[in-house]
Amino acid sequence: MPEYPALDIPEDGKLIHNIAWFARALRKAGLPIGTGRVIDAIRAVEAAGFTSKSDFFYTLRACFVSRPEQAQVFAQVFRLYWRDPRYMEHMMAMMLPAVRGVQEERAAQAAEKRAAEALLDGAEGDLPGIENPAREDEVQIEIDASRTMSGEERLRSLDFEQMSTEEIARAKRMLARLTLPVKPIASRRAQTSHSGRRYDLRRSLREAMRRGGEMGRLHRVEPRPRWPNLVVLCDISGSMSQYSRMVLHFLHAVSNAKGQGWAKVHAFTFGTRLTNITRHLRQRDVDAALAAAGAEAQDWEGGTRIGQCLHQFNRDWSRRVMGQGAVVLLITDGLDRDDPGQLGREMERLQLSSRQLIWLNPLLRWEGFAPKARGIAAMLPHVDSFRAGHNIAALEDLAEALSRRDDPGDKARLMGLL
Image (cartoon, rainbow, N blue to C red; front, side, top):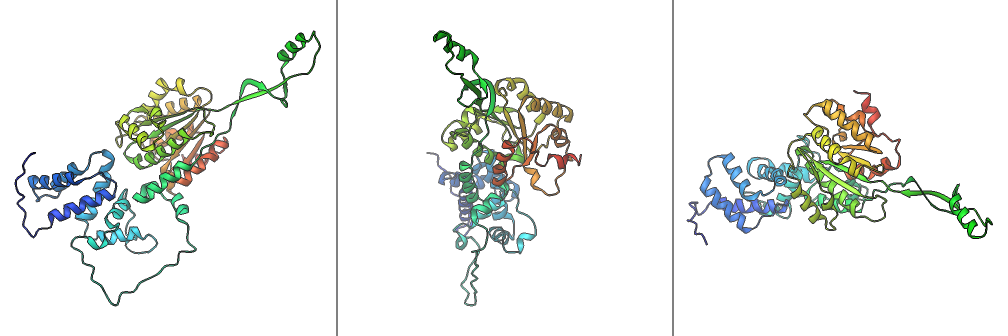
């Protein structure tokens, strides 16, 4: 075992206590941090020093962050705990959104509410440097919430980006119960039916020949139903990370649900490159499936090259998975810096190869959204339906778009703004 020298920290100092409590807050926010990492962080701070804020930040991040998706949560918890002088007021404001006060100064940033809940959860009286003396003149306020919206109803309309740790867990359980049924498609092949509109003359004549030419009855047939494939292209770039994780939970439920009608569910992720994660989503355990998908896709929270990734899909995968009238679900914000001409051509080819192309865009949650970005303007004309995809209610409405091919969503309104 390696031997470490003694820490040169005053006996009455609070740095070790603060680092340990900071690690506790990160653990509540979802980061897997054990005692060994806390000890390593203390030793690393000793080696790096405590004179520069940036050195202190990156020293702790190197000790506590092991995956790219954990960096954003770490940054918010660090800012609230170490740097923001009014972090307690901001956290209380975010935890009590119904009370008008400090939270009106600015909206909660990504992962900020999750960080606030981690710092406040069960530890209000244990915050370092904060005293909570008992006050005799303290007034306790009771709020009657009997007529307010239920928790599940509120969760349906809550933005994925603004959910806390507990709300994300509840939302994942709700997504696991969602269904995405699809109507069957009439195929050219026929099957026997007593009420079919077409006669099966070949079978009727064969039966008559066995009876010496006597026609007993005319057999009827009807078109045999078949179900299309579902092809999902999910953006996992930095601006789409939280939305893509929730959508992948939803797709895992769709892939493993029986009796929904889909022949096969094919899932692809893209950021700077295209990755096929179909086989990973077939695992029954959702955590194991998403962990394997995350290990397969190496461009999580990276850049975005939509045109290049769609070109790769159309060239390498379109003929394999787009046969039999597949329905394509495209989840992306459309913010692409590549050539808009190539993006428009690849989108047109994708639409012509699919039976229905539906685009879910989380940016549509903003009332003043307009297709001003070049990538969005190039993609919009080549989709059949353009819909929001930022909460559970939007994913529930997706079933309506699948059942009604003539439902363009918000496409017609936004096409008028181009």
